Image (cartoon, rainbow, N blue to C red; front, side, top):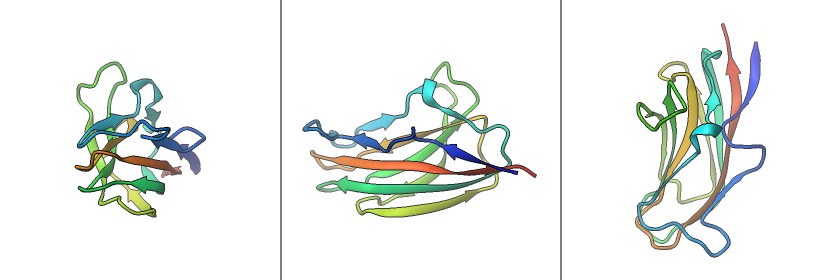
Length: 128
C-alpha cells in the first residue's frame, strides 16, 4: 500500500526571498519539529522540484537527512543528496534503504553572496 508523503509543508519552501538572501555556504535546515515520520515505509519514491533558484557562484545542494529522534541535532545523517541545483529541475529518487525514522530537508548554499531558492519535496511511501 502506498501513502503520500510531503517532506515540505503543503506549500513550497522559499529560502532567501523578500530581499533577505542566503550568505555564502550557509546551511538552512528544516526545523526538527517539522521532520516527517517515515518509519512505516519500506520504500520511498520522492520528487524534489526546484521551482526557482538564484545563485551567483558555487554549487548549492539540497539534501534529505534522516534521524531517529526530533529532540536534538545529534545523530542526523544525510541519506539523499541532490548536488548542482543551480537550475530549475526535478529530481526523482527511489530510496529502498538507508533511511531511519524521521526525514527532513537541508539546503547548503553555494559560494555566492546572494542566493535564493524555492522548492518542494513530496512523493509516495510504500510498504511490502
